[in-house]
Length: 222
Ligand SMILES: C[S@@+](CC[C@H](N)C(=O)[O-])C[C@H]1O[C@@H](n2cnc3c(N)ncnc32)[C@H](O)[C@@H]1O
Image 1 (cartoon, protein in one colour):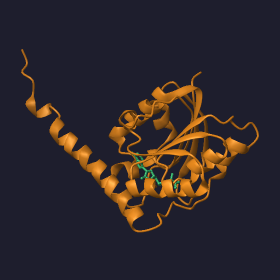
Image 2 (cartoon, rainbow, N blue to C red; image 1 turned 90 degrees about the horizontal axis):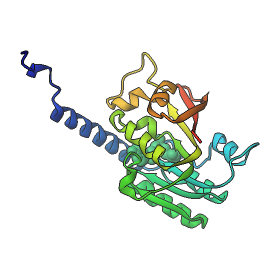
Image 3 (cartoon, protein in one colour; image 1 turned 180 degrees about the vertical axis):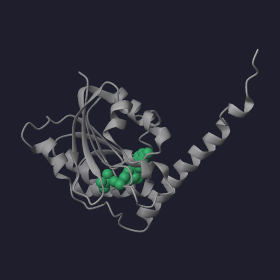
């Protein structure tokens, strides 16, 4: 009988260490942006794509919303102002702190949680939710945590729930590869297709940035 070839076994310890290091690098980089002052993405402006879903023709009726990677809370506050019952999560403590101050100043109730969007079970976020909003969070999440993100949302989605996501595409050819693998990988429609079984990819609209970006709309099966 053939003996197992030890050299072909993956070194699980090494893989785990590399994955931990990737998560730590992402955390450190994000924390650095917030520590440096106003993060470059923190425009304070709600994107027209979310406004259309909330106020446009055929707008969704207000329900329960979960924002993943809420930063300093601009869009969570916008949703709450428009009648949604909002829970919002961010990995970086200081971002959540700023979001709390902004929500208080705006006199709106938003449930703001410091934690990991790929580990919602640890945060006591039962759902169900009618809307998930993700502005550039998923596309930065380490690849090995993305299935957990998708499972967390799927588990908490009301039938027919929407997911509106903005994400950066893969690093354009020719540009220098970032040291954080997930940031270089970005997000694609094909990836969302395979990571979100039980969801329909309703729309993919390119963003207006100088590098490839996309707005994705997904709907959970009824
Ligand atoms: C590009 S910023 C956008 C922030 C906010 N959506 C906005 O538009 O101002 C991405 C945000 O996602 C958060 N984030 C990244 N990975 C996360 C994770 N695993 N769980 C929760 N938040 C995360 C970051 O801390 C950061 O605030």
